[in-house]
Length: 276
Image (tube, helix red, strand yellow):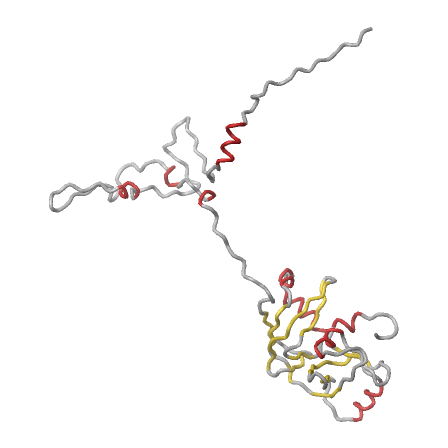
């Protein structure tokens, strides 16, 4: 709606364009700098805060970003009240992305810090719009300290992010048992030689024979597998490889049984010699 060539800098930040008469009135008053304003829509009882970019608008008109109009529930030509205010310097702010696509950005804080340079102040409850890589991301201002409206000009502000709207934590599914390692590397190590502690079977104090327990065979002492240490008891002719073994389904068994390499009858190619 601003006459002349299109200016993207007006839409990117949180500053408005006011008429020259407003500058004349402000210079006569004893106001605090930088100039900050509170915009109020009395019909909907909505308000926000902003800075000023230039004083080149037509009389009795101001030009504000579209995202600010949505926060105030304003349409083109509606009446808005502009009031000069002084705000405290921000120390903390918390934002919530309105779309999980914001997580695709590598360094979210650096992008937000760069975009906030075009803003003069923040208001709790506003949904601001920032542009990055030709894409607009909406951010809801969940919290600001030390007040509900703060100035962010030349300040040291801590920033936090809440989970985006509709975001769900990814579920880490465990791999099927068939895809896990089926062979224990310790089983492939040679049997221990020499003295091995607690290798004997043991006897009962009452003289009775000990019952056989199948778990005892599983609890036999195994040599710890250490990668990179050669098998000094290697015998020529045996090579062992460690790999992931998975179970073969019935369909794969059928395909393997049905297909046999070079099992077809084949065909003979015949060529004819050209008569001379």
